[in-house]
Image 1 (cartoon, helix red, strand yellow):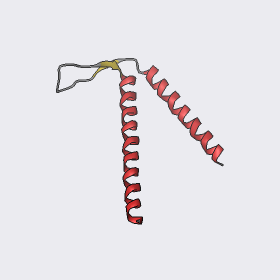
Image 2 (image 1 turned 45 degrees about the horizontal axis):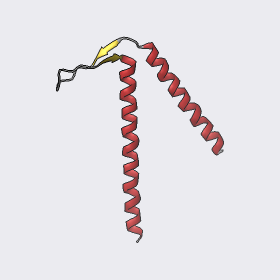
Image 3 (image 1 turned 90 degrees about the vertical axis):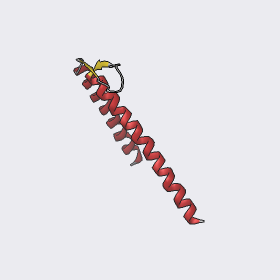
Image 4 (image 1 turned 90 degrees about the horizontal axis):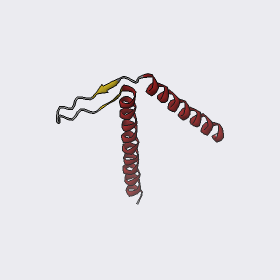
Length: 81
């Protein structure tokens, strides 16, 4: 059962990767990001910007999840003593 679960997880990750790649290739129009703090305006394809923000948000979410799990694990460890 665990092997089947890992296989489905792997297939899901590959499908998401391929969907992101198709999205990236399908949106080649350059877009500028207007930053109000500075005069620098980065320009990139729309697909690149959206995927970069998506992966950045996923990374921040995973890190916050690990931090929250660590806090819960520490609190449970203190209460058991």
